[in-house]
Length: 394
Image 1 (cartoon, rainbow, N blue to C red):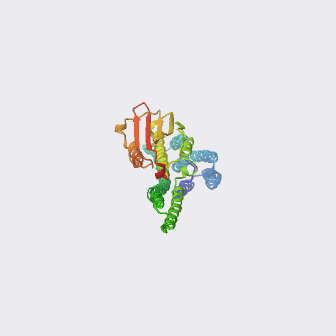
Image 2 (cartoon, rainbow, N blue to C red; image 1 turned 180 degrees about the vertical axis):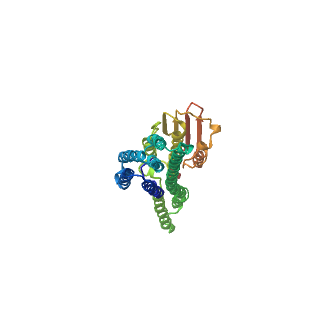
Image 3 (spheres, rainbow, N blue to C red; image 1 turned 120 degrees about the horizontal axis):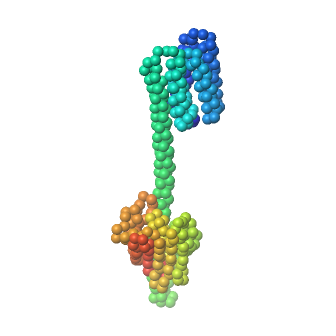
């Protein structure tokens, strides 16, 4: 049995066990018929008290085994002098099971029961079924009690560990949800500012320029129009700063290509992930970069969780009228028309996005998302977005 102090219950049971052993020794002493028996009782009691009060017995398995061996030997000596020592075998069973490993405790209990029966018979007492049933039944009760308590304790420890793990997981999940919510709100605000305020200010600038060109020279309204155009330009620059401040952290340190390269570098394989750029890189509006980055993260996450691939590749392609992102792996593949919920659901408990969410991101910017896959042939996810008009992107 484990030497650790399991709980206050064990401490109480151990004290009761010590009291029972001391009480049975006192009973043997009271029924003693000679000084030799009393001396044997005192010797056994001294050995017992020395171990019960010794911290080394509670801390060291070796020390407890030595003490138990000496105590058992002194009990055998007492059993030679008095058949009443038979009753002290019962608490001795518990001590053996408590201090010894199971593989040694069970044989020790069996040997003690056999010694108790042999001692009783050796004193010439009348042989009856009780002489055999008593020690054997006591041994069985001790084994069932100790092993049953050990099983309950282990189950309790497993449940405690599971509860602690559940609490920790819930805390981590709450943190992840808060972080995801904050990031989603940042993206939403950046998209809303870009699509409404920034675009509106840009349109105002264009209209004011056109108005300036139609005004006659020396018109008193020219100064006001120029002032309005300058104010709109200043506010457009401020709106752009807001959009940049709300950009996802992965895009704050550089371009979309850099963010995708870092994503591949920090991905712990397998699979081995490679990144490449095709065409001449160009700056894209923040919503385009955010959408492509999130689609790449989601598609790569699906590859890591489900594809069992050996390698994967992310390619960012800049074309004359479009920008494309391809995520290809050599994994197990699947049937796109029968995507399980864990892969294709719009949102999952693990925080990822499925195929419908990726397609929704692409369609929100006027693009398309296609998935090519078949069992055993890997998977290719391709998203294509139209290149924005530079004047509107401004």
